[in-house]
Image 1 (cartoon, rainbow, N blue to C red):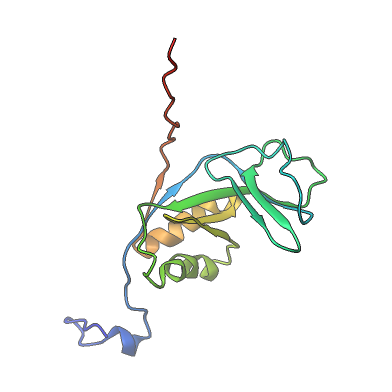
Image 2 (tube, rainbow, N blue to C red; image 1 turned 90 degrees about the vertical axis):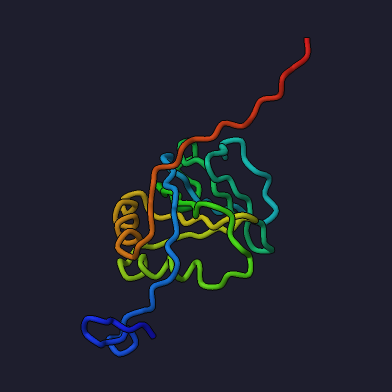
Amino acid sequence: MTDDSDTGATTEVLGLPEPGPAYTLQQFPEKLAVVKLPPGSEIPTWAESSSLFSITATATETSVICAGRSIPTKVIGQKGLTAFALQGELDPTQAGVLVALLEPLAEEQISVFTVSTHDTNWILVPALDAERAAEAWRRRGHSVALAVPVKPARKNKKK
């Protein structure tokens, strides 16, 4: 419970959520897709890597997150997604990170796909809703910035 010294009210009494930590998200420029393939599928050649390239296989499906530019029209999936990555490494014991980031999007009726990696969380939203998502996060005190592309280091070849 937090006191508001000017009014004497508390956030609990007002029904407002206690402010949590502010996070910084990076917005990636390319359009991504989440596609569904049959279980045990090989990764197709059109599944190009991008800022986020992920393969998840279960007994009932294989899902691929990849660049959306080369996906055949008959492939089942959600295309035209914008990726946001939580900046910095997260403490894996920290609870509530996704709740803090997804709640503002739920309030705005923005659908999401989420993926967690060892270091961070990724949130994919329809590209048409990307700016609304960024604004919803900013209203909650989070920061959103355009991602700076990172090129993999090249190994020097000996002649």
